[in-house]
Image 1: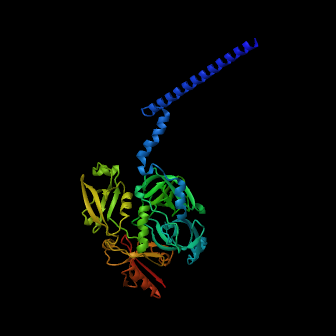
Image 2 (image 1 turned 60 degrees about the vertical axis):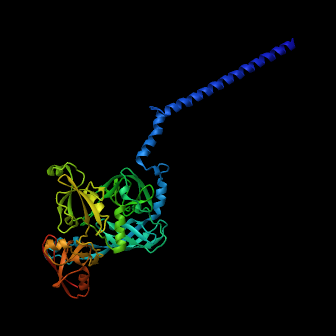
Image 3 (image 1 turned 135 degrees about the vertical axis):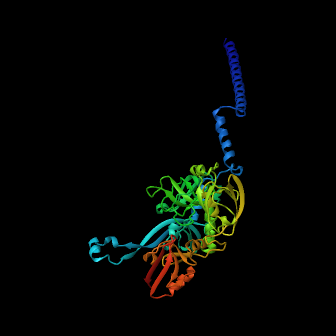
Length: 501
C-alpha cells in the first residue's frame, strides 16, 4: 500500500511539474509576442503622422534646430559655463579719481550779495571716485571701455580678474560713441575674441560680464531684445547710437564691460540702462562690437577717430512722412538734405531720395545707417542703393571726413580744459569765415571759467589770426599778461573774452 501510494504520489508530482512548465512556457511566449507587437506598433507610430505625445516631443527639437541654428552647431551648443570662463578673465575693474569743482557760492548770505555785491568765486578742488569695467582687447595691455567711465580722470587703476593691479593711461577717446581706449603696462594678458555684431539675432542668449556695485567679475544672462536702438543719450555732434538691447542685468559699474555670445565672443560693450531709479529695471544697451573694433583701431593708429560721413541730413521713414511724400515702402531712410561738397553731393544724391541698402546690407532706420557708415574710414568706397520717384538706382560714393577731405584727421588737442579741433570747410562757408579753431568740448578749466561755451570758434588771439589748434596752444603758452580772444558761435553771434595769464 505504501509503495502504491508512493508511486501514485510520484506520478502526480510529475504531472504538476509538467503543467507548471507548460504554463511558464506559454506565459513566456505570450510575453514575447506582446513585446514584439509593442515594438512593431511603436515603430509604425513613429514613422507615420500621429498626435502621440511622445512623437511630438521628439520631433519638435529637430524642427526647431533645423530652422534656428547652422548645421555645424546642431551637434553641440556652447554652455554658459564655457562662455563665462572664456570671457571673465578678459574683463577688468576700473577705478578712477577725478577732480571736480565745489562751488560755494550757494553758501553765501543772500543779503550780503544784495547790499555788498557777490564775492569772488570760491571754488575748491574736490576728488571724485568712480568705478566701471573694461575689456582687454590685446595681450599687451590695450583695454576698451566707455568714455564716461574715464572722462576727466586724473588717476586710473585697473584690476584684473586675478587681482593684479596696474595704472592705466588714456590712449584716446570718442565721445560720439561713448568709447575710450586705455593702456596698462602688462604682457600675456587674456584678450577677448571679437565676434560679429551684424550676425547677432534677436532672441539670442547673451552674457553681460562686469563689476556692478564694485562686485568683481559678475556674470548675468539674458537675450537680445532688439537691435539698432537709439535712446538719445549721446549729445555730441556726429553721435552714433545703434545699441544692442538686452534684458541681461546691468547696473552701475557694468559700464565698459563685455556683452558676449554663447561662444564667449565679444559682441558689444555695455553702456547704458533704461531706468527711473539708476539701477537695472529690465533693459540694458551695448555698443555693437563692429563699431568698437573700428573705433579701437583708429585710436591705436591715430589717437583719434577717423569718422566717415555721407554728408546728408536724414529722417526716419514713418507712416506720416510716407503719406506726405506718397511713399509706399516704409523700408529705408529718407534724405531730407544733402550738404554741398559732401560725398552724397559728389554722387548726385538728392533730397527726397530713400536709401535702401549700403553695400548690399538692408537699411531700415537712421540708427542702422549710422552704424553701417560708422564702420568705414574716410576714403572708403561704398555702394548706395536708393529709391528716387519709385525707381531704384545704385551709386558708388567715396566717403569723406567732417573736414570734407579723405585725409587722416589729427589727434584732438586739449588745452585749458577745452578739446580743440580744426574748423570744418562747411562751417567756414556757413559762417563766412576763413579760419578758426573750434571748441569741441569743455571740462573744468580756464576757458569754461571765462564763460566760453561748446561750439565757440576762436578766430583771433590778441588780434592775430588763429589757423590751427597747435598754433593756438603755442601762442597761449608763450603769452604773458592780457589775453583777448575773438570768435563766433555756430548761430552766427560774435563774442569776445578777455583775461590775464
